[in-house]
Length: 282
Image (cartoon, one colour):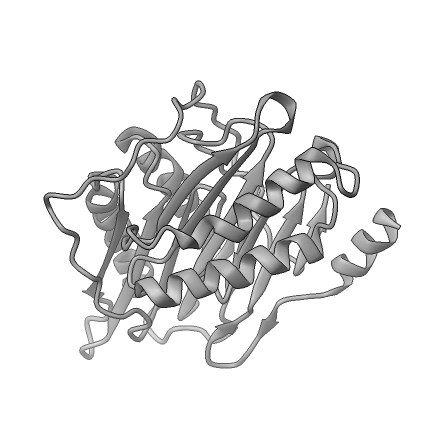
């Protein structure tokens, strides 16, 4: 059944409209990481953690990282919302993700789901994932419309993404996120708007590495296009020829994020890019 489920999932493709990259759900079921049995302690721990994740209403910055259980039945989960998503919308997105991820990956001990056009991401595992920078698996989505001044647009994208990387990586343990715009044409006032984000449990160095690995793939996947999104487990970037994000809520400078259990040694995996199907089992 798992093999059939994977084959069906791979037949589902991203829907890309003429004016904007439109997709709702991307997910990965980690088949090789093992599976749990129905009504097992691991499943009960997972359900408990997912059902209570967004109940932490004291968190208003969109990042949740919690563990539940002991030893081999311990579950670790990361929930992250885009930096401009308001707290109530964030919790709703994560609640929907929690329901969806157990439907799409019904018995995997590790799964990853991006929901509502990457407004939120949910990742759970039986292994340590806090503070671990990962660039695989991932996916790229690009618009099929081309820009009218490609040389200047592509250079503006590159400069903007790298400038935003510096800002995002210097964020604190609650948010590593930055948005901005740059002039993208010498002929008319055309702007490119950009967004970069890391899971804020990463160090400044590893956030930079993750974002730079995604940026480095733009020339091979996404040049000359008016919009592209490159997404990895630990970070994502997006650019577009018109504004697509809202104002970022301000953080209280006197409030810090609660500390999760100590992170495991950082690991780095080589980037692998996709024009991804909706779901993948591997």
